[in-house]
Amino acid sequence: MKKILVVHNRYKFLGGEDIAVDNEIEILSKYFEVKALIFDNKKTNIFSIIITFLFNRNPQSIKLLKKQLQTFKPDLVYIHNTWFTASVGIFKLLSKNGIKTFIKVHNFRYDCTRNYLTSKYCIGTETCSKCGNTKNSSIFNKYFSESLIKSIFVIRYGKKYFKVLKNPNFTVLVLTNFHKNYLKNLGFIGNNIHVLPNSFSSEIINKKNNENNDLVYAGRISKEKGVEELVKAFINSQASNLNLVLIGDGPLKQNLENTYSRHTNIKFLGQKSNFETKEIIANSKAVVTATKLFEGQPTLLCEASFLGVPSIFPNFGGIHEFFPENTDLSFKQFDYLDLEEKIKLLNNSSFQKEGINNKNFVTDHFSEKIIVKKFMDVVND
Image 1 (cartoon, one colour):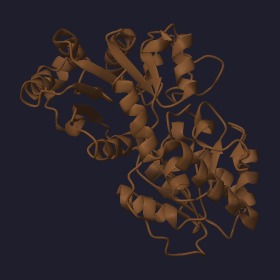
Image 2: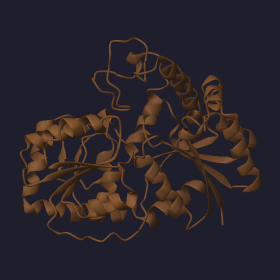
Image 3: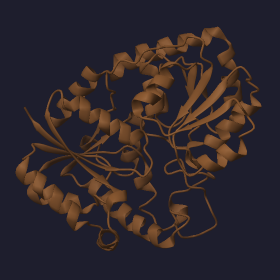
Image 4: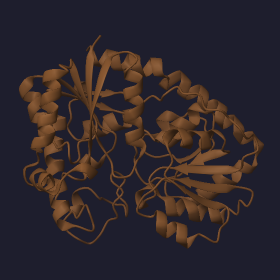
C-alpha cells in the first residue's frame, strides 16, 4: 500500500478548500496509508512570521516536514495550500530529496500575487476574477488593501510559488479543464498538468423536511463571493415565500447582518460544521452563489448536487463543468437581474428536476471510485 503525506495550510476562515482537503484525506485513507501534515497561520509566533516573510521559508515548517519524510517515509507528497506558515521553502526540501510531489491548485490567486503592477492582472474588469480584489488607481499591486508590507511579502511569495508550479519535477493537479487550459496559456507544459476534481465523503444525510423554503448560501461572507449582490438580488426578487440562509463567516458578515437585519427572511447562521451545513443543504429548496471568481470546484454546489438539491450559479470559468449542459438555473455572470429571475423560478415546481439531473451528473463523473481511479492513474503515470 502506497504511503501518501498530505500537506495543507488551513485558512483563517473555514472555506471550501479546507473542507475539500479534509474530505480527500478521508477518502484516500481507504485506499492508501495517509498521514496529514497540517499547518495553521493562527498558531505561528511573531518571530516565525518575520522569518517566513523575509526569506520565503519557515525553518520550523521545513523541520516538521523533514521529520515526516524520515519517519513516515512517504512514496509521494501531496500538497495543497502553503500560504504562509508552510511556506514555499518546503518545495526546495522535496526537490533536493527527489520525493515524488503533486501540487493541487484550488484557485487562481497565484496569477495575481506574482505581479508588482496592478495592470498586469486586473485587466478590463472592476473585480479580478482570479482573486476577487477590486481594481484601483494604484500602480502598485496592493494585494492586501490594508497592508503595503503584507502585499510586498505575498508578491514575493507568489513569484516564488509560480516558479515552483512551472518546475518539471513537480506534477500540478487542477480541478477543471478550464484551469488546465488557463495554465497552458501562461506557458505551462500540458503533460505536467492533470485534471483531478475533488470527490466528497459518503456520509448519509437524512432529508427531514420536504416543505422547506430555504435558499442556502454557504461559504466565505466576503466581497469576492458576491454575497452582498446576492442579498440585494434576493430582496429585489420579492420572493416572500423563501428564506435566504447564509452559512459561514468572513469580513462582510457583521456589516451585512446589521444592514439587512429588518428582513426577517434573511438569516445569518454563522459558522457551521461541514456535517451541519450539509444537513441544512439537504433540507433546502436550493443553494445559490453569486461568486465573482473563476472558482476551482465550488464545494457548496457539488455537495448540493450529491444531495439532489438544485443550484443557482453564474455560468463563468469552469463552474459549468460540474453540471449537465441543459441546466436552467445558471445566470450570466454579474447580471443580477438574471439572478433575480432564477430565484423567481424556484416558485415553479418543475425546477426540482434540476436537482435530480445534477445528482445523476455528479454521480456519473465525480463519485469516489471515479476520482480515486483518476488519482491512481496520475500517481502511477
